Length: 214
Ligand SMILES: Cc1ncc(COP(=O)(O)OP(=O)(O)O)c(N)n1
Ligand SMILES: Cc1nc(C(=O)O)sc1CCOP(=O)(O)O
Ligand SMILES: [Mg+2]
Image 1 (cartoon, protein in one colour):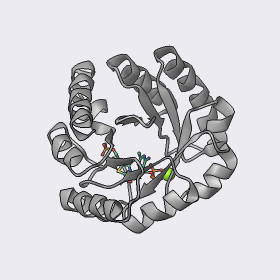
Image 2 (image 1 turned 120 degrees about the vertical axis):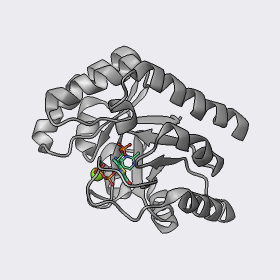
Image 3 (image 1 turned 90 degrees about the horizontal axis):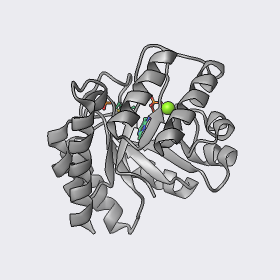
């Protein structure tokens, strides 16, 4: 089951990611993506091992960004790959059929390719500008999600769509109304003064809408 709230780690150091994920788990997040962009695969591996232990202790699912081999090595729940990494098909060849494999999409065509390649979910963004990621794809806005989800329904395509990119609490109800399965956030939780209260409010928003949608 793909969760409705994905937390994406962010920090400038390896130890910072460990602390950052620890805090997110303590605040209540139960789906964590380890996203380290400034280190090599060899440097990411020990961090992944450390955060796997932390996630296990909270019963949280761990997704490794960019590196399927690390996801396999540490026994993570899955991996997320984007256009500049590899195809979902190539990631799936590394992970095997049972792991979660997520792919980044900006268009309906991207999503259809990921579905054909065996994706478990798609991260679709950016919703709006964000400084968390460099080289953003074209901004979708609410209209972009409305159009993409409508096209998926018309083509009878069913895959969990996770909205991502600059998402704030007040954006969530309207995003979920478009039919997205959930949201992925980084800055919203990383920068929150009271992380537990923020996580609780986000879960209330995503779960309330999930109940309405089904
Ligand atoms: C849930 C989710 N969606 C999209 C992304 C972006 O992945 P990618 O395009 O590979 O960019 P980087 O995160 O690697 O910079 C994601 N990580 N998670
Ligand atoms: C990792 C990532 N991928 C994006 C995409 O559009 O594919 S936007 C993004 C950053 C998400 O962090 P924040 O919630 O701080 O904006
Ligand atoms: Mg990537």
